[in-house]
Amino acid sequence: MEPDDAINVLGGPLEGCSNEPLTGFFRDGHCNTCAADNGSHTVCAVMTAEFLAFSKYVGNDLSTPVPQFRFPGLKPGDHWCLCASRFLQAHDEGCAPKVNLAATHKRALDIVPMRVLEQHDIDTFET
Image (cartoon, rainbow, N blue to C red; front, side, top):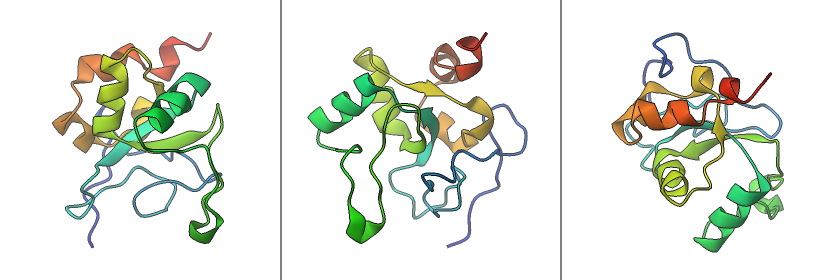
């Protein structure tokens, strides 16, 4: 599997999303993607309690550890390469997490409009 070019939604080099917990389709800490990434794990999201509850409710429990897959379970504040469609679904339901645009892969734009990503840009929430 050859990863796509590591370019973020802003047109620059894709920054890291998280090494703890280790995230990404390739488990390389970046939201890199390729043709085999059917879920498009391209949105670098900052977990919130509200989003984690929503994700569990719709069938993807991200907060419970799964040791056999070396998955520690996520908690609020963790950064994670989220599936673009799940992010858009959470946005539509009013509970989308914040995103790091510099660490969000440009392929996310195949699913999520830039204006939607910008509404949740972590930099607009930091002061």
